Length: 452
Image 1 (cartoon, helix red, strand yellow):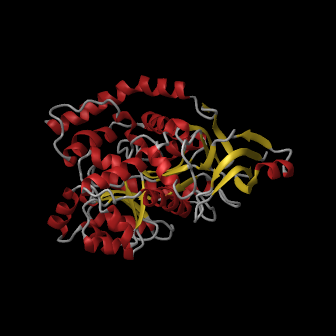
Image 2 (cartoon, rainbow, N blue to C red):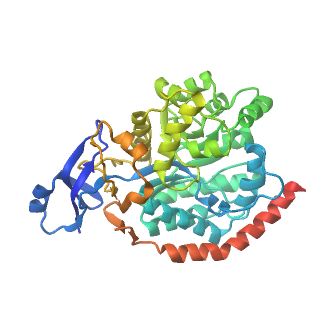
Image 3 (cartoon, rainbow, N blue to C red):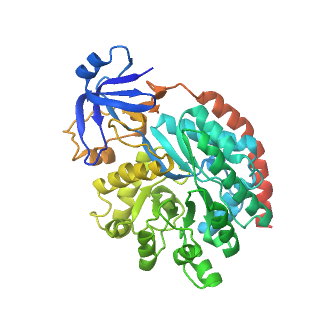
């Protein structure tokens, strides 16, 4: 049945953006069929199911360009020994022992708690990067089933790495290939080919990945130069920096996402631009790991396709909008850096163009006829004028994730009046909590091997 959202202040996020007062949106068959005045659409579609926005903002759902569902069990986890002094130690003592600790059950719970968070906070499309080296085969199906249960839209991949041995690297390659083929039957699921980072991938393994991906019409999703260690490792082992190495091996291109790129140099930025590779920026994560601030403004000025992710932080994407807005100002001691309109262009417009690559033939991230029916309602009551020109600054200084009252994907209402309709948050949290001691016990076993 068609869904008619009425009496809303519509934010189209078209290019250019526009705001329609007392507007309405008709969604039918998962697609927006009409946008216009409430009075007109109510008269034209009297039999449609109604959702009265009561003056709230209606806007496209938020999109996350890089996340890690598998990291959910890190919340509140104590890392044994002294606090890690840098990002390589964080990898060795937190993330790598944790991903080894995951089995089928914990992979499912990790995904579900993140999906609850996404629905509650208006993030309708997520591009995930998964790792569970002791549960590889079929792991992406477990996540995809959770995404389908939630009703959200997601793009999945498995992280290939050499750090757990050749057999598991080959298993990771096989999981990506299998899922790239299998996902074509899931309308709300996309797929790409996951890679960890250059510092844990040999030329031989990367060549095996490009060979396996041949004919699958895919790019790759890989971490690049998040910390100086990635560049140092590449120079020491291969005699070249990370980005030229990935270009030589055929990893870069218009369907590839590189996450972070904090420590790339001018030549590397030029290669990323020339290959039309996407660069995902995760400001909250970069600050938390103390890895530095990327050349965000420079990349945009050079024409690089910058997008915004959260790297496994909460799926409240406006928090990363705000972090990006502030990080580059303080890092450069220049209040002109990362202006609000640039953040909005990256997080709303660029993220949507990236998402469209994985859902061919669909327009995502706009409230226009023909676009995907992914809509959120936001209970924001401005006390100064709000219009298309100053909306980015209202988001920066006024919006809060708790203001999202409804989340809709492909015309299906996943949350209405802040009540989840597809997932039982309390039951999911209770089940995940009940299983946490098992995961943490495994983590303590694996981290003890690191500590010696």
